[in-house]
Amino acid sequence: MAQPASLRTIRKAPEHRVAPVDLPEPAMRFVVCAVVALSTGCAWVPGPWKATRPSVQPQVQAAQQARQKTAQLPASAYERPSDIPRHQALVAELDATARLVEQRAKDLSARDLALSTYYLAEANANAQVIATKSLQPISANTIASLRDAVAPLQGMQKRLKSGQAPFGYRPVVVTVKARPGQPEPPPLRVYLLPSGVLERPENFDIPTIRQWLTDLTFQQLTSPSRSTVAQGEMRVWVGPDAAYDAMARRVFHRRPIAFTPLHIAPDGAPEQELQFDAPDDIVRP
Image (cartoon, rainbow, N blue to C red; front, side):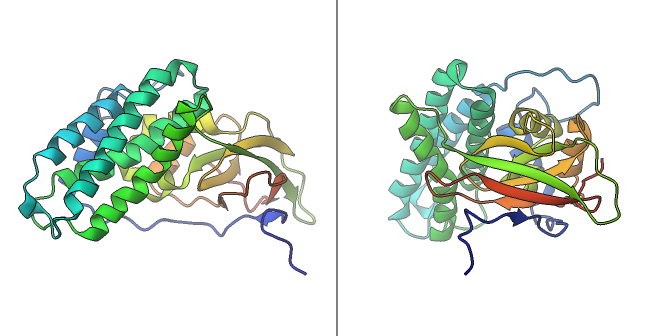
């Protein structure tokens, strides 16, 4: 009898390359520069890395701008008048969550703050693109896409208001085993990012991806390496220790990464084991 997914050892996915997104260059630059960049500019110049806690202020400002632009949209911008209040309510939810996260930021752990800024960035990018639409009416599908982006924020807001951390976590253990006849691999780092970063890297800059890698990656080297992972769609892979800069560039430039997808687990699910084979599954910088 097949075991439930929460009890099985999950093997890594095939080497994965995400197809480029068909987004015009001006729109792409707008999203990166005006919405999700956590630094002061878009250009990335390699240099010494200094770990810092990401600021929520850019997300607060972007949410406020999206709310203002949404309020100024005429009824003719929509295919259906009934979508106007839905759109405004979703952007108001985004704005409220951004301000709440900013208020609680000093009390959040590094990984809770990193994930909070990620989900805010995703929703802000979506909201900004919709608010600046001019060539075609805003459709019901467009509003549904924004609703999906805002959904994680609603859970975050509910947990924060009740005095909890913004995310629930599930236990995960990663093992790396040598194939027959191969030498045992050295201790490896377990890297982790939300799925949207690998699927839409053009929405983020390299320093932002690097920051999230630093804050979310497992602290314990393999093998095994144990940690707790936030509930949500995550991507996990293994590679040399302290390769954060190289991994951030690899993600940003859509180079192949052999990852294992980690899906939402039932509450109280037992520890989930992810197994990688050496040397084939090791992602080299």
